[in-house]
Structures are given as C-alpha cells and as structure tokens.
Length: 115
Length: 117
Image (cartoon, rainbow over all chains, first blue to last red; front, side, top):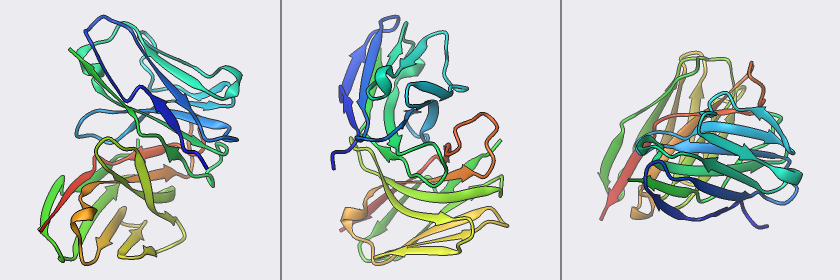
C-alpha cells in the first residue's frame, strides 16, 4: 500500500514570496491533515479536512495560509506572503476517517526555509 | 488546553544500554496516547499506541506504559542500538474535542536520542 506522498521535499524561498505544498493521501482515506513542525518542537495541526470540507482550521494563520482539498483527494497548502517564522517542516497525514479509532499516517514532509 | 512535555530533550547513551523516555500531559481525559519515531528527512512512524483503558503496550524491545491519573507515559527501550537513534515524539488524543476533528493529536516537543557505538 502506497503511503502519504508529499512534494516538494525541500523548498527555499525569500520572505514575502509565495510557496505551495502538495499532498496525496493514502487511497481511500477520507481525512487529511496538515501539520507545521518548527525545529525543536512537536508537530502542530494547522488544518483538518473530512473529504473536501474543513473540520478544524483553528490554528491556521488565515491571513497568509490557505489550503484546499478539491475532489476530496489531493490537497495543497499555500503560504502567501511567507515570513521568516514560517521556516518549518510541513507534514501531511491521512486517516480512514475522523473518528478517534482511526490512526493517522504521515508523509515525509516538506522542509521550508524562508530567508 | 492540553500541554504535552517530554523529558529529556536530548539523550546520548552507549550501545546496549536500557533507557527510558518520559512524556507528561496536563489533561488526563485522553482517548489514547501514541509514541512516534522521527528520522531526519522522514515522516513520523508510529511505534506504540496505548488506549486510555490500557496500562502498557509492548513491541519487540519497546515497552510503553501509561498512567492516566498522573498524566504520565514512559517509553522503555531495551538493549539500545545505533539504529534506534532518532527523535521520539509522544502524542495524545483528547477524549472530548470542542473544535471538531474528533481524532486531533497534541504532540510533545520530542526527545532526540543518540545511541553511540
């Protein structure tokens, strides 16, 4: 079974530029998550989708971050404009559904460096 | 608000040593607790998942315990090997989540383990 796919693996941009990350969840997984992991910290949930609807985006900085999941499969996370403090690893995860009994499976992440 | 703390932040041990990683959480109303491993440039790999009704889980050389009443979990690694070098994260899933997302995870800050030859 293929895992959660993310691209690109690495991205370096200057502050105020825009960047987008892509995630393809495990086939059949209805729930998709985007996490931000700053160096030395644990992952923090940014947004959770159930199919193509947003379940939780309470910690998403909506003035600069946006995410979509068209057709309930792939998802993109965008930052516009980027700030230095956005430097982090962005992890995507998926699970069969949003119920507690379903585990989350993580991708390898995209490491973003903002200079 | 649930807060998860891991001690120590970093640990270096010689090969073959038994070691314990600690995780504490402030809200004891959890559904489960999970230990993950994170290697540089790779995603998170789930090691052990303990339901709130369980006391411990074992997988090979790993044993995780859970004391919900005191808000603590430990990950015991027996006979450590250089291949165990990685960052270990614990994460809790709350029983009740007000903002939706029934299976939201709250992660600790991690323990960076180095096992030396």
